Length: 445
Ligand SMILES: NC(=O)c1ccc[n+]([C@@H]2O[C@H](COP(=O)([O-])OP(=O)(O)OC[C@H]3O[C@@H](n4cnc5c(N)ncnc54)[C@H](O)[C@@H]3O)[C@@H](O)[C@H]2O)c1
Image: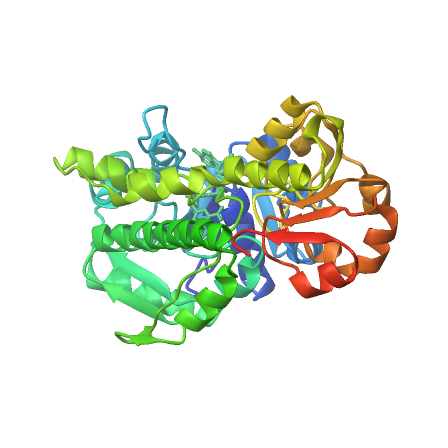
């Protein structure tokens, strides 16, 4: 099936994940067609631009559209001209914390209308177990009149890359493959080896692969929740949580070491905020009262308020009140070195600051103005020097690399004497910040 008659890849759903996958595959020489229902996204791609704020992605899109290997369309007929169809539409969380798979159904219906014998369909969106076999497969079969595992291949391969380092991770993390039959699994593994240079871990079926993704994100969210509670303890005891974690992580356990992740001012983004709830919902459907996903979500959701509390305590310690202080927020994206503000925990800190009556400035070189309005009513200050001028406290909510490029001594010169440096991402060296004249505080350090 690899590089057969049609030998191209259609990526259905050209949002964050679809654009990264499509641009990387095109860059590796494959003809790629992005298919999306949003016309402005398609127009933007065809103009050689991407709205997705991922390091290195803009260049990949521009280059590959330029040489004709990458294009986008709203016309699903394009599916027919490609051997491989990768589906990466969104799966948001519903009002009752349940997974919404409507876009998966719509995409399967639209793809089914153009399915041909020999196609391999790969679902990559994060979905509850059984979605590939009980939703996608019957829709594709009904609309196309073809049979999965006989006329066309079908597999689920979870996407496990992290934003900010997506391009590197796409071409280095092994892919998990769960297919409806052995032939689909082999074709899938061959595709990922040829196209991305990565190996595959083939599991029994799509539902196992679907569960793998949920297990990964439940582990991450729970691990961070534990780190956050350790940090709260260390704050009370006056210890450095990062020293505790670094030393703890030297202990071998099972096949690896203890691996506690880092505490921070909150967990956000499109995956970790919803995938544990998918697991919780799954448990409810199975008559299980699970506590882990609910606990990890609850703990991590306390962190913005906790961070705000640290700030007000630090100001009080300096004889200052929040309502008469000038506070400069650096970074509002949900994580370092991305401009993605979807479900960002920074929003809750900013909301508390806005309500406090303080004089507030906000700077984030990664976030476009139109996206910033989803987080703050305060217009972004374009340059860091103006943002921090005379501030009583710097509050780092995303540790973007640009914030490390300006010397700490320069920041200290610009801010008020005895300025607080609240490092919500623990991304600065406390000793260096203190040496520059700041009153430094991290999360748990
Ligand atoms: N963002 C991440 O870091 C990440 C990481 C791993 C997995 N995932 C999973 O990948 C999936 C996609 O995430 P994302 O962040 O790219 O979402 P996104 O919202 O950025 O992109 C989804 C795209 O699908 C398009 N779309 C919706 N319905 C469609 C249809 N019927 N046909 C064609 N296109 C359609 C939308 O217009 C949008 O461009 C989700 O299931 C998510 O959980 C995301």
